[in-house]
Image 1 (tube, rainbow, N blue to C red):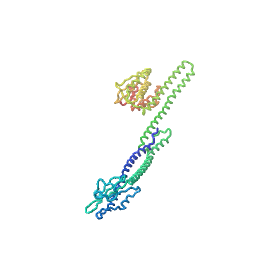
Image 2: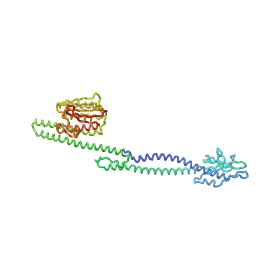
Image 3: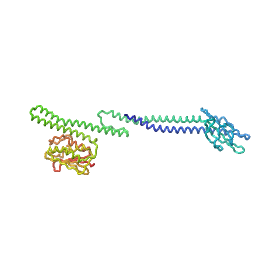
Image 4: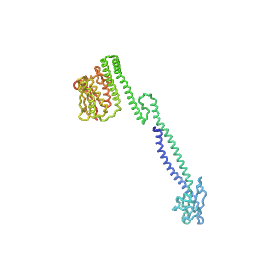
Length: 457
C-alpha cells in the first residue's frame, strides 16, 4: 500500500498547528471584540450622561433638567437600540426620565461614573450613572443615568470579529499557498534524482553523483550507491562464475566425450573397462571442479553477506580432519592434529571456516607425496588464534607465493590434478574474516607452512 504524498503530509503537519493557533486566536478575538464593543458603548453612554448633566439648571431653587436632542442622537444606529435616561435628586427622587430605570447599588461620587447591567421592560440594558454637582446654597448632586439595549453592541462586536476572522482566513490561505509552493520547490531535487535514475541504462550501476544533491538526500543517495556497488560485485561474481565454470568444465567434458566414444567403438572388455575407469576419473574431476567453483563463489560473496559469531576454530578444524582422514589414508599420508587445550574462539562463519580448513588440508594432501606428513594445529598466536597447516611436500618457491592465490594458477612443475582454486578460495575467506595469511617454508627446511592468523573473539 502506498504511503501517500510526502508533500501533502508535510503541508498537513505545517498547517495543522497554524490552524489550531488561528482557532485559538479567533476565540481570543471574539472576546476582544466583545470588550471593544462594550467599551465603545460605555463611552457613548458616559458622553450622553455628561451632555445631559451640562443641561442641569437650578431655577428658583428648583432643579431643572433639559434633555438636548444631541444627547440622544449619539445613539443613532441601524440596530434601532432603545435608549433610556433618568435624572434623580440626591435623595433618589425622580426628576425626569424613566422611572423603570433602577438606581445603582453604589451611588457615584461627584463627577464620577458607575457602569452596571440592568433590565428595563424585560430587556437587558447597559447603564451608566453619573453624578452632576449642583450648587444651591450648599453643594449637592443630581444622578444622571443613561441606558441602552445591547443589539447594536452585539452587532458591532460581530462586525469586528468577522473582520478579524476574514483576515485570519486570508492569511492562513496565503500561508498554505506559500507553503505548497515552497514544498514544491524543496522537493524538486527528489524529482530530479528520480529522473536521473530513470534515465540510466538497464545495466547501469555506476554511482549517482552528489553534485546538487541536498544534504537531507545524501544518506539516501549513499545507500543507493552502496546497493549499486554491491549489485555490481554480485553481477561481476556471477559473470566470473560463468566464465570459471566454462573454463573448468570444458576440458573434463571434452575428455569425457572422447572416452565415451572410445568405449563405444572398442568391443574388447579390457579396453572398455579402462575407458570406464577413465570416464569415472573425469567425472570425479568435474565434480571436484564444480564444488570448488561453488565454494569460490560463496567465499567471494561472504565479504559483505556473512554474519560473524563466536566460533571454536579448534572444534571446526578437528571435525574437518575427521572427514578427511580416509582420503589421507588412501594417499598414504600421515595426517596429524594438534589442538588448543581450551576453546579457540574467533569471530566468523562456521561453514566458511570449515571450507577454509578443508581447502588448506586438501591442497596439502594433493601436493604431498605418498608417505609424507601433514600436520594441522590451532594455537594461540600473538594475542590471537592461528590455524597452521604444515606439510613436507615440494613447497612453493618464494617467487610464486603471491601468485598461488590467483584463480587457476598452478605451479609450473606441478602434476597434481587440482583445480587451481583451492588457495583462491582460502584468500577470499581470509579476507571476509579480516584475518591474515602467510606462506612459509616448513620447519624441516622442506615443504610448506600455511599460517592463518585471526583476532581472538
